[in-house]
Amino acid sequence: MVNDPLSHAQLRADVAAWLNEHLAGRFACLRYRGGPGDEEAWPELRKDWERELAAGGWTALGWPKACGGKGFSVAQQVVFSEEYARAGGPGRMGHIGEGLLGPTLIACGSEDQRRRFLPGILAGTQFWCQGYSEPGAGSDLANVRTRAVRERDGNWRISGQKVWTSLALDSDWIFVLARTDVTAHGNRGLSFFLMPLDQPGIEIRPIRQMNGGSEFNEVFFDGALAAGDDVVGAPGDGWRVAMTLLGFERGISTLGQQMQFSRELAWVIEAARRNGAARDPVIRQRIAHAWSGLRIMRHNALRMLSGAEDGLHAGAQGAPRREALVYKYYWSNWHRELGQLAMDVLGAEGNVIDAGDEKRTRLQQVFLFSRADTIYAGTNEIQLNLMAERGLGMPREPRGTL
Image (cartoon, rainbow, N blue to C red; front, side, top):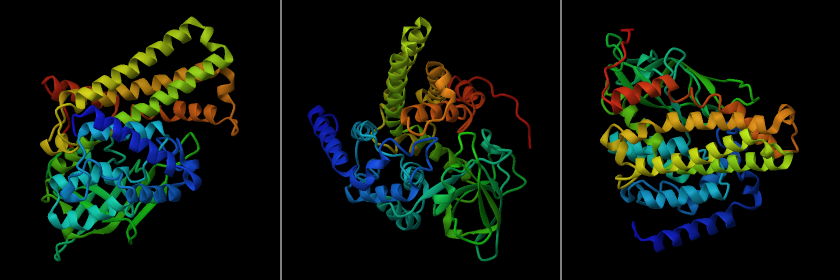
């Protein structure tokens, strides 16, 4: 079935039919909502949607069957991801749990951790956020200073601050990278913790963004508890676990992301035709450049995914393929340019908020939110370092010892 085009065609038809039937009624308002820059849209209803997906058997597609997943091949996961985006499936409230933490626990966690946490992620009843970035450790994650101190009973007390934590207010648990050995420098002496958010010693503060939303949050830890059994890997092994998790960020969902980009480009073209901007040869050239860039992005994503027999392959093996190193740099800059193109096409009307014009509003959101694309998950500068050092084997940039 993995390489059978007819089977893929049938799967594509099945996914499209299920989404058409279920993304209706009270879920109809979720179409095309809840993506980056719009993650505050109907969070509780989107949690219900996660449970709807789970009931239909459409969660954890790439997880092994032994862990409750569907055991889908990469090609099958691509089919689902594309059809989900094509149908306007909402941003996944369960993405961080299902797409990042779940595969990491399968690759690095204990049998007890898999038993306790995977079922809730699979069923859409337990939601996670990511505690990586800090005010002084955003792109350079090795500078993490959040502290973890072990107590006599084997549990840990966590103190420090995380920032840019997506969906923290709507999550049940957080995974946290913290320093357990203060004498170690850089990426040594870090550990990876699983922590419930509803406990004394944790405070969540929303961060108001320039687009008016606050999907990002600060999370403060003041002696918050992490159970001894909730350290993934051994204490001090946090960097390896964290890098394994980051490997999954460049996984199957990239194809669905590109379907959203394609839809945004279509909105730009529609606006250009409507207001006459398409008659400008420079605008037409920029639209053509965006179109060709999207096709390049797709082909590189397929190359990046080729050779992996399932969605866990890259992370389980450690470092991503070299093709994956260019992906974040490429798409983030492409998307930022698309946002600028959208505003140039809209012209003066792009400066006016009109709640009744949904497509204009969405293009304004693309422009505003895409400013952050080249910053979060590693700035352009960090991405170029990764390409040079890990991909091309060039000498490491000098780094401090703090």
